[in-house]
Amino acid sequence: MGREYNARVGTLYLVATPIGNLEDITARALRILREVRLIAAEDTRRTAQLLAHFDIHTPRTSYFEHNKLAKLNGILAALDGGDVALVSDAGTPGLSDPGYELVRAALDAGHTVTPVPGASALLAALVASGLPTDAFVYLGFLPRKDSDRQRLLASVSRDPRTLVFFETPHRLLASLADIEHILGDRPLAVARELTKLHEEIYRGQISEARAHFSQKEVLGEITLVIGGAAPAAEAKWDEAHVRAELKKLLAGGLKKKDAARLAAELSGWPQREVYKMAIE
Image 1 (cartoon, rainbow, N blue to C red):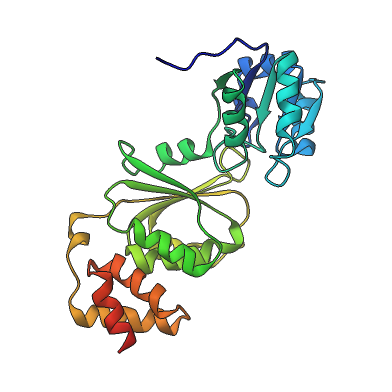
Image 2: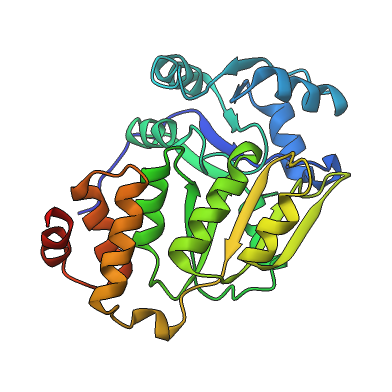
């Protein structure tokens, strides 16, 4: 039998807000934000600007990465007395920002959780990229550390689906360099400042994107959409290629174990054999 709940009073609404252009908010989202008893916001100052623009005066509370667990009980108590809306800085809450723990807690407490769809940088970049949209992999923000980023890229290097990542402006060039080295010079789209005044969607090869963005100051929110692996990418490297890759990774500061794991992912060789090469 399915799990049964006693009906609780409040509904948690997951309300998508504009990622730039304020005209992208829906009429339903505005109504919900006016009617709920509380808005849980990732950044109350940013949300305050949105609410002021639309003359909405609903009480707000902060709900962000570093207080999300401490705030759970208070928000659940508010749900016991009425409806609550969760909003992120921009776009759809719960994607690469706090939200999962609150959604899970609300469901476990017997509350209804309802999405209020709207803007999404992920989907906006994907559909405008010019790359296949029938199957894709979304992997959130690329890791900050070089070695972690390289490991993640290696893990999807032979995936034929379109890849979608978020990235920050100051790490864009380093990430593009890793992407080209590990995935090869594939087609990609770099979507920057979507729906805003200085929106840019750069489409081309990864090497071309590196050259383009190295000549300008990069600002704004960035979504990377990268073509999936071609069938030829599954071919196994020869030993000389593996050893050359190992040498490059070790020279870059990776430990032997990490370098062997990454080279194995890229080359299609068993990790045990690559590690033997690394310790020779």
